[in-house]
Length: 217
Image (cartoon, rainbow, N blue to C red; front, side, top):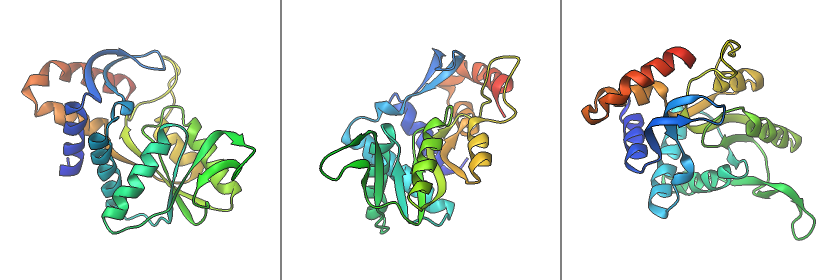
């Protein structure tokens, strides 16, 4: 596991964003871990998170011209990542969308820089892929090109109900559907590797392993 990935998992645990135990996911599954990016909710943690996003994007080697943040979580994440990129010498425009069109002022549904060139969509995770689909439609409608999706954590798990699980993960399906890469700061394998090196969290290792065997890709 790369230092950046290891540091991100450790950071997420230390801030309480990544927790272990028994949790019910949005899909109704019983998960042994829970990742809530909404808890990066102060200046220090958001700033550090943005550094992880920015460095991961730069390390990916992908060509990009701007960032796009889908409402609502993506708005903060794309904005903060643009600030972090600028601090690293890469001044990058960003934009985000409103849920409802504004009929006064600048109007429309897009706020920020004009959508153009190669656009990276920045979000926290991909569950059903709905926000990515909406973002791709907005970007293409503006004549720009969706270049990649940048997320914090790839859960690397299949979607659907037990007995009717999808062939691939939500991330794999999004990448295949739109023909663009999905880049994650860290994934479930990184999380498991982190657990293996933390004796105080050893009690959760078997549960995570069983969950990965049942739903993982």
